[in-house]
Image 1 (cartoon, rainbow, N blue to C red):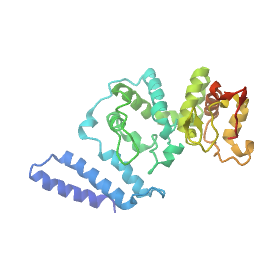
Image 2: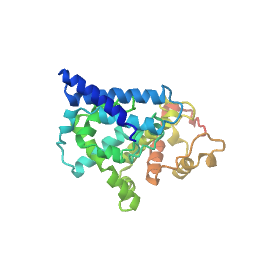
Image 3: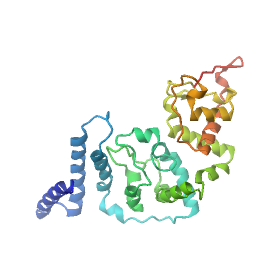
Length: 295
């Protein structure tokens, strides 16, 4: 038996009754009723706390919410931009700035922030997300979806930039397959051709994406669990030491509470290292002595 069949039937019966008195169109009522019933079921199944891992039913309902909120009229919009190489390149840059923090650079949402959401951030390479057409994905990015962790990007992204982002998100599965088969080494080849300045910028994105700021301070911003990284580049540590530390912190700093970042690729580690090595603030250097602490 289809678990969702009974509530869908109830919704349609209510809709038919309301339509009979010419109160609202059927499509609009189905949307509104779907939102209400989905939200009610999420609350009934999950309660209000986020202490436990979401159940399969709850995660399904949360993902369904993204489907039912898209207005009928929004589905008919057309992407005015061709999927050119330039649009893809600009879409990738926008993705790294706006989306990678939660969804990761590959779209699989395996970042600390993405996994920590309740329910976790959706895998953008999944059939569910890829089933949305350009217009539906555009609407979700622009408007967000309440109670799912997906914010509205309308204040930050123009419509043109959003369409570029849509092109890149729909291209994620292809990039994923090519990277896995070794036919592209997408990220590695892209990053190896970057200048030092571009590598540092990419490292800054990874610094935010991997949640480093939650434990470390940088220019007086961030957590205080780990050491201040404002002058990390002045401590004399080699790139090899930093990369090794990212992979296995306790092997380099006994007793370190820092988790290993084995999910990062070689080029990502290189970029993150370049970013930290660029952190040199003379204001925190006193009498030629740089105050240091272990990770």
